[in-house]
Amino acid sequence: MAPMADVTDVAFRALVAARGAPNVFWTEFVSADGLYHTREIAKMPDAENPLMRDLLFDTSERPIVAQIFSSKPEMIAYATKLVAELGFDGVDINMGCPDRAIEKQGCGAAMIKNPKLAREILRAAQAASTLPVSVKTRVGYNKESLDEWLTALLEANPAAITLHLRTRKEMSLVPADWELMKKAVEIRDRVNPDVLLIGNGDVQDLADGRAKVAESGCDGAMLGRAMFGNPWVFSGLVRAGERGNKSESPAPISPSTGSNAQNEKDHFFENAAQSRNRPSASECAADKPSREIGAGVQPTQRDKLNALVELAHGFEKISPPKNFAILKKHIKAFVTGFDGAADLRARLMQAESAAELEKTILDAPVPRV
Image (cartoon, rainbow, N blue to C red; front, side, top):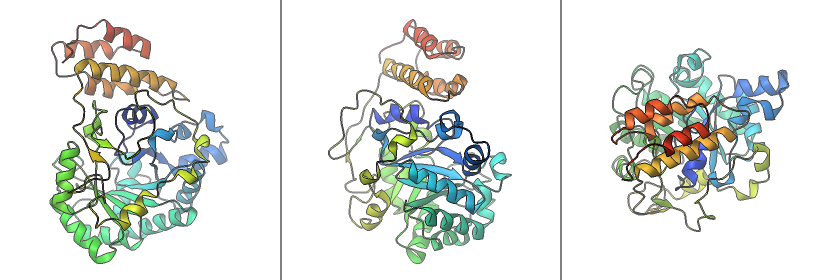
């Protein structure tokens, strides 16, 4: 599951976990500087801190990685220690976000232009805890620069690198170039073969991910926009000894309640690195994935609307509360593809609560197929 701001929060992850979880969950990205200043300078209680809200997770989401960003090694070290205390299974450094506000801080994709600082950032995170440290980035800034950029990251020995197969300049305006993953694998194998390489960009579903992994030779695929309106996207992945009944969405828990979970850690990065040459090296391995690939689920339109209602109620439980208007991007994704969808979408956009959204949906004449 790709980390996406105002999308992959605890409510949406719970929705996905109840229907078939990915091999690894990622949180939304969180400012390491913001965590330090709100907690240590402003002395904001964690229960009132919106940044700590973004680090809420449920045990059904394990293994789960917290994604953070900063251009200051000391801030990354602080946030990494906090993430470890909260019970996460790994920490990921965002070095690919193209948002200008993030780049003005020297963070996100701006890091591609400063390989030396990027290595310092990764090493600060590695020294701050025993958690696996990974990085998510792009293949270059204005143009592809894998030889320099990927080599610099590999020299810092992260547990894994997720490559969005577009440059910063390309944003998401052009197709992801999966041919570049073949070059990335060659560089990885030459410089540091122990590092996992995960591909990201235009992965449509599990079958597409498996095909891209088999073709490129990387270790896994990360799904992003394919999740919009489709929390069943991972339903073909079934863990051996799957925990519990997933028919009900788990309730969000305080991050601190996960702090005793050290013994449950999956060490997924280390295990995957050791088993790359085995068929089960990744969820998208060419022969036999680490979870059995099933037929998946074909939800009806009513199923999708029920999931949207469930998401809205879960969203309202997040504390401190988020602006209900954030759900509009989910409304657009879930309510589509049937007669009357445009009219229903327009009415749902006016909803200001989960109860109002649910009533509007229940009153709507929606086909069951």
